[in-house]
Image (cartoon, rainbow, N blue to C red; front, top):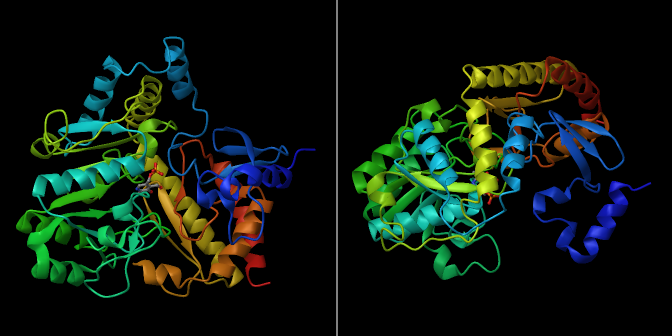
Length: 428
Ligand code: PLP
């Protein structure tokens, strides 16, 4: 029988680490990754025929479940017309109009092929618009893997970045300032010192790449205020939160208007798509209107646009996001009850359709230092037990979980029953 273990062995021959994106490798979890054959609704089916209730959703896009018939149908309808033309197509305008309608802070939008491209381009645009080089990001926020954004920093309010990957030139990394997430004082101190040199702040409005960390009250307001005061561009990286925590993204949920917004994941309905957009006066700096260069052979691909439009349209169903958040709440409350009953120190955090579990005795987790202080071994044991029970959680303690509208009350109950057994194994 074909097993995930044998497929992984074969994959490792010609693919570095056997995967095309590192977190898929289950590194640190002491087991090979699961190879998936197909997916439907809330479920993944592996090559051995085992079914999993999936809380990863292809890392976010599958908000209405896998193989959504409306999304697949939209792609099928266009398929025979050809895959790509490298010319303007009407469907790109439909997509742009839809995005601008759903996210009112976006006056103009450019489609790209990934979240990484969206953030990389938004940073270039912010630098071109302001004529400044320095950017501010937050520790534990992930914005894709472009050089300027692959930078971490030591603690401290104002630290010039060290590259977090070989290959990122130190001379580039030094323009990236990394502050602690949710640290309002650090943001204010940084801008008081060098605000006039800062091109932009880029932030995950709910941090989803160090588990799930919501902003503290006043954090986003401070970002907005200092950017306005110092003429810096506020970039919300809504690649994960966009269309997920609310129809209009985190900016609608928290009532903050950024200058630029980056999108990915859901906007492509499961196809390789990203987008960045925002205020007209900034977006008009992009080529061919302006001097800031940005381009893409496959950008605005018609099949990808068809998938994205079909998915976004479904999310406009009244009550969609409330129902999604309700499911997350039911799941998180159920998990908390079972952890408490098993005597396991665990808390959950959530915003709308995303959530996270932290194995910690603390009552909340607000930043990277606190997130990385959680019990990684407890997570590993819990994750492995859940996988055995047929529940697919993100294979890392530092990734958010995603709910879909395809998850039924029975799926959530199955998850909670599995968790009851899994929590019992955490201390073994
Ligand atoms: N920004 C955020 C907030 C993300 O979560 C991710 C990916 O997980 C990215 C950017 C990069 O997107 P992509 O993997 O499509 O390049």
